[in-house]
Amino acid sequence: MASISSPKSVVLTRDHPPCLQPVTARKDLHHLLVETVLSLCLLGDHEPLPKANETVQQRSLTPDDVRKLIDAARGERLGALVVVGLGTGLRPGELTALCWDDIDLGKEVLTVRRSLKRDSGKTLRLDVPNKASASLRSIRLAPPVVTALQEHRKRQEEEQLRVGSVWSTEWPDLIFTTENGTPIDPSNLRRLLRKLSRRAGLEQHVIPYVFRHTTTSLLIDAGVSVEAVADVLGDRPVTVLRHYRHRVREVADAAVAPMTALLASSDK
Image (cartoon, rainbow, N blue to C red):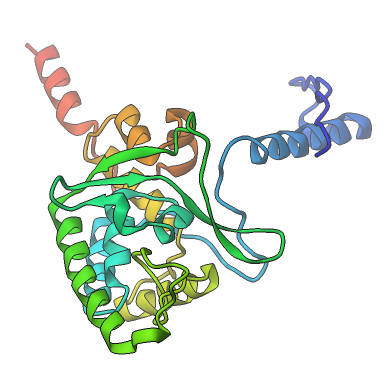
């Protein structure tokens, strides 16, 4: 991979706003912006950019959207995937790579050990990060997530008995699979979420990474510290704030209570 050189320093003055800067200065500014974006894209494990034909406007679901989506997924063969995704904020590859030996339903703990990825030959494979990676983590599960997994396991066992030898022996322990027991292709996951989005009556279709954005935004909105959320996501706090946290309230009201107390006390 080609290295990125240090961008030139560009100084903009009050007398010469960007639109009126000399052509060379504006080119340097453009160069600086492009290289900054490229450097950010090359750092760490970030979600892929949307495809050219994929419109992505909604970055996080509201609490009402979450309820609608879970209701729409109820009874769906892979409905538990929606509950687990929203309840843990896993990356799509981590979610579809989950195996039953990653889950301790008795202790209500999920351990992230691997991710489902495509190799250069377009074949899906399980990728195991190095032991120092922050993505390797254990997460305490909320009771609704545990219940969803328990129900899903029972449904999956019944499905395996029904299809018999058709069930894949290559992926025997995967939690979320196709009807033949093979891994879920990313395009099929997107298709499922589009269908559920329409059924739920959401304004924008849900893409897999919206789970991660939603978990982050709702936890921080509920008062959970950024550091604690980063531990759940297996990511850095700075990435959590810059990349995954979005405002989920139509009206920002966090200042009302403290400012009411402060201003009231100043009147005395």
